[in-house]
Amino acid sequence: MSGDLTVRGLTVDFDGFRALSDLDFTVRAGELRFLIGPNGAGKTTLVDVITGRTKPAGGSVRFDDHELVGRREHRIVRLGVGRTFQTSVVFEQLTVLENLDLAASFRRRTAGLLRRRRGVAAGVAAALETTGLAALADRPAGVLSHGQRQWLEIGMLLTQRPRLLLLDEPVAGMSRVERDRTGELLREIAREHTVVVVEHDMEFLRRFASTVTVLHEGRLLCEGDVATVRADPKVQEVYLGR
Ligand code: ADP
Image 1 (cartoon, rainbow, N blue to C red):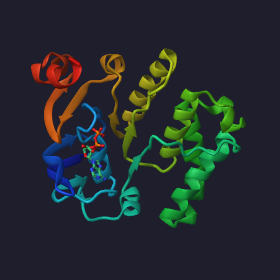
Image 2 (image 1 turned 135 degrees about the horizontal axis):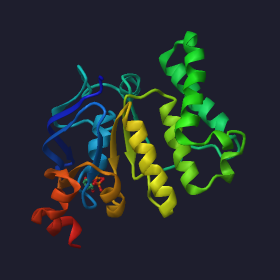
Image 3 (image 1 turned 45 degrees about the vertical axis):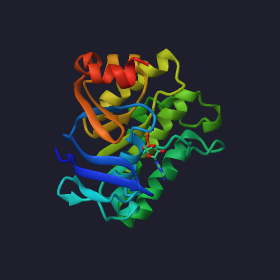
Image 4 (image 1 turned 30 degrees about the horizontal axis):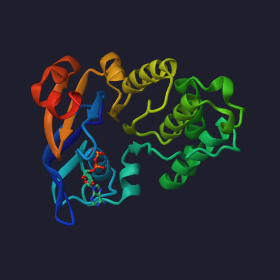
């Protein structure tokens, strides 16, 4: 399966402040990778560089055989890289289905391929199925619970047919039941996609993460399974021990 992400020697400067420093980061196709680190560690900056929003001072980001550094954001979307934002993109007056249709039509426009229309409809149906929102398809998005709304946003992203998904704190503010459902959803999505999740919720990581990457002050602090990462004295000092 295609979808390897390979970051090498990535350095990002903001007016002389080094937000990422010579960072290497590799995620294999089909992996579900969690990215953690204290505030200011550089997690959002890394996602911003991968998606073309921030230009690095140096280094490379390869997705499959494509170099992403230097490409415009919409071109990177077209290569199959999609992200969620902390701010909501859902239209409350529109139904769940209409929101998904709208997201899919955005893809149709960016791809410029009207002949893919049938493929788009199938993508909407698949997103409804995957997110478990089929029974709510005709409800206005405004009546969804917080968790359902997050799943809708992930569904909207899926209609764009990304191969790499970058998700920003998907379980923030969710109930325990919603977090569990989200963990299962992420595992399901990772069966066919490469998934990178920025997440702080340690209990959630313990239950659903296999490999965790810890950033600190723009550098890679530690990487491994949850138990290894939690036991690492460096991680305890800067992150877990607070
Ligand atoms: P995280 O997502 O891990 O909390 P960020 O990537 O948002 O960390 O930020 C990393 C560091 O870079 C922080 O010190 C932050 O203040 C700084 N930073 C991020 N974006 C900018 C920017 N546009 N201008 C200046 N400094 C920034």
